[in-house]
Amino acid sequence: MIAAGVLREIPTVARAAGVALGVVGLVVVALGRGGHVPLAALGLCLLGALSWGIGNVVARATKVPGGLSLTVWSAVVVPVPLLALSPVIDGPAAMTVAMVDFGWRAGLSTLYTAGLASLVGYGIFNSLLARWPSSAVVPWVLLAPVVAMASAWVILDQRPNAAEVGGGVLLLVGVPVALRPSGRARSAVQEQQDLVEELLCTK
Image (cartoon, rainbow, N blue to C red; front, side, top):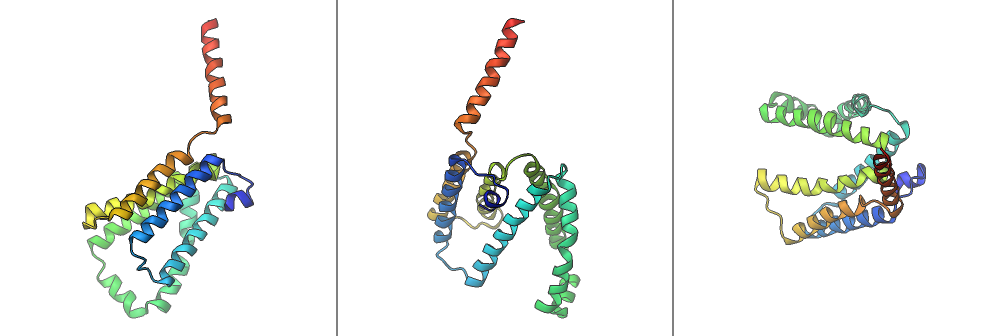
């Protein structure tokens, strides 16, 4: 929606329908959790999603050819406000304890977050945003809750209930619906295929 308003990249009906289906899936998953979510935590999640959406539009507007460079330079900015907020919110004592108790699990988690999820994941994602409209890239994010629930099941033995499974299915269905080519795109592809076949036959 932000990209449609700012960049005039209007999504197709199929993409809008797929995203809407994914939103319904998220609502079903949330209801399956029983609604036991503090309002402050919910508000922070929604603000985080809004910030992420704005960041995607900025990344799309910059049209940087290399997504990795954009990811690296944006990562330089993030630790500064967090480092300033940590002593205010957590306190110096908590910071000291965190550094003293920094073990291999925390190191592995940091390596995964900073290396695999950020550098690799966002590098690929930003590279795709530089080449394709936001509405063609963002629907893949609908897979994130499904991967998270599956990972929690395998690693932490947190089995999803029926509502969460149903919501996950809606999310999975929403991705191919959103990424389904429009009739115009399919016609263009068919015309290119016909032209290639005609050229091959003439030879």
